[in-house]
Length: 471
Ligand code: MLT
Ligand code: ZN
Image (cartoon, rainbow, N blue to C red; front, side, top):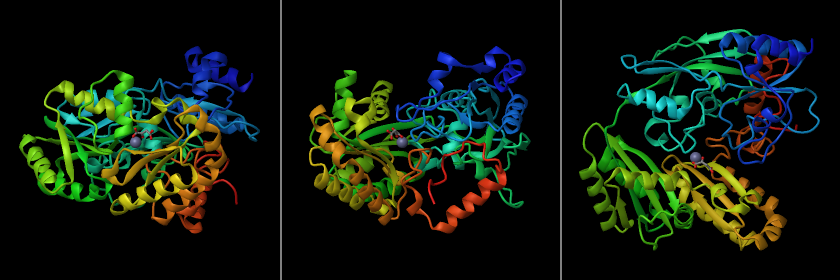
């Protein structure tokens, strides 16, 4: 029996997709990465996952774990071209159960294929909060979020995915199952191996289940969109918000006017604020106690100091939803057809350097690609800015492509010079393998390579991803 036939007879027809049924799993959502696979394999349990991994190890087949396939860096799709090993996509879509919500323990245990949205709903119903949140919540999965150490809009208050994982279960590259599903808040019993699997993009093993931390529900929440006088006041604004509202500031997101206008036009939404500022901050306060007085006081003080020039406070559910829809749709890939020719960055720098960093990127872009749009948005409260430099009209595409590589190199260089990273929350995947190396000293990459070799000596776990390419 061939490898695929063997897997089909083990998992049944629902467990194997080939041909056109497999196609959607082979291309990433931005369309940047596309590859080939012998089949898409969809195990329904940990045991089935372990047997699939054992078969791959025996036949020398590479495994590309995949969650909701919403990743931005090509980590969850197979590589294209002549790779020495054939591959399968290991889709976790049938392992999507929420195993238990445990309010007294403040945890939720879920399989890797459960979506972030499903987790939020299940835990809300138990008067607890699963805190990570971002636009793709309906499709992105627990496993994918762990694999990329995903962030999103609430990192400022609750941390990244790494901060939510108390324990996990993984199928190792030789098919053994490691049950590390512990629910301890404190545990100093040696190396904390779960952290190796978080952010590893499936290169060390397949995460199958996780115990995740829950937070108190915050029934009092309010969002506001504040027009700001410039990026120079960002950090003072954040400091004032923390001083006046304490830890209740859960989100502090940058919204450029050009993006806000485009989303409103595209979705037929009315503008929450009249034009006039280049940038806005969308912030959200959430607490067990009422927040609107504190939010009002903060906005009044910020405006007295000249940092905020106008503000819209959401007073109804509908207002709130409109503000967050605008935020969720801000990615240029939803807004400009030419985005695929543009440059896209998921960069972070130490937060006190965000303003000067953004100015420097804009200066370089204006010098090399004067017609292009430099577009920064997102999670500035934690130092992460999604920067895009892109042509927005067809006639700009050609001149942009002529300088694209040079522009990318200069922006990468400036990011490292500012002490930053090119991968704040989207992972390295295939996108950054050739560019990430200067961020860390050689010894750090060598250690990572040793870990990879120790856990996956055959090199079958998501090969050609994450670790820098080349010598
Ligand atoms: C977001 O925060 O909206 C994203 O991570 C998407 C992006 O970078 O385009
Ligand atoms: Zn983001």
